[in-house]
Length: 198
Image (cartoon, rainbow, N blue to C red; front, side, top):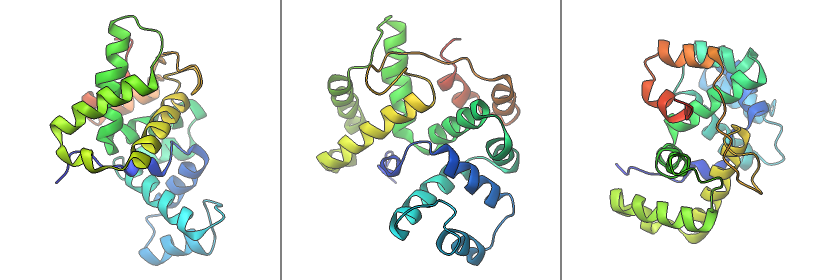
């Protein structure tokens, strides 16, 4: 099984949509109810069924790395808690995001570098990924560019950079509820990846 996939390119954290999907998952829907909520009720409020399906699949795959307690915090928690938990789920779901944080972002922090340099950092990172998983070499240029765009947007939404324009590193302090949740569920790797202040 490949180490990396390009699924993250389907979308960033999508907080409003993820809250809706989390609320739906808390009802433990059948396949039919899931399909009905997406297609007939259009809970993601997307213009095309294809976009709705693609984003719903990504959100569900991320949320499936958590469980009811995590879904409740995303559905009903503050914006900060919900966003940080979605960020944690994205790390668990996407090895690309997790390794970019550990290899590139954390490296910049250690070297006291202020900004991410998209072109240089991404190319070097992808070269390392190819060493671990040769399949990455087969990703199209368009896919690689889209993955970078989404990774940077996720970092901005998670408050790890101040914006997608300047890409200045701004590691957030994790909310105590998020720290408690991750510790309670034994997510020490995710916690150490997110908590750059340690």
